[in-house]
Image (cartoon, rainbow, N blue to C red; front, side):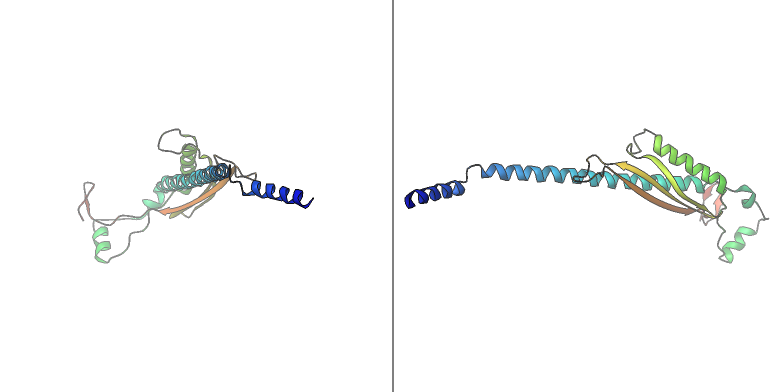
Length: 188
């Protein structure tokens, strides 16, 4: 009876020590790791590109909004032939160019709508529905914040995450560029 049980043990050890098929397990494991890594890298690169595109849209909207001139404030006051030379001689800073905040907000919304719905090659097509979450304008500077949802190409494993929300902010102001201009050409 003892010889029968030792024969069984030897057979079990032979099966455990048999390495046939072990390469297949390693190859399958490495394939799964490679595919999972590619999925994660694709999702991460999608988020990076979407974040940059949202930042570009936000900056473009801020620039479009800040270029709305408040003509009544800009042309208020009197200037004469000595205004610019005196400002240069006294090294006085030029005031900022006033912004029409109401029209600027409208222009910001138009630019964000353009970025959300335009199908040109310059804009990323996966960035849809850019929302303006904050708009602040004090007549001299403009600050905006935006938000957009981006769908991920691959659902995150073991979770229900298939999209992410991204935010971006930009602020800007108009300032007079120093120098002497003759017929629209800057001489100094």
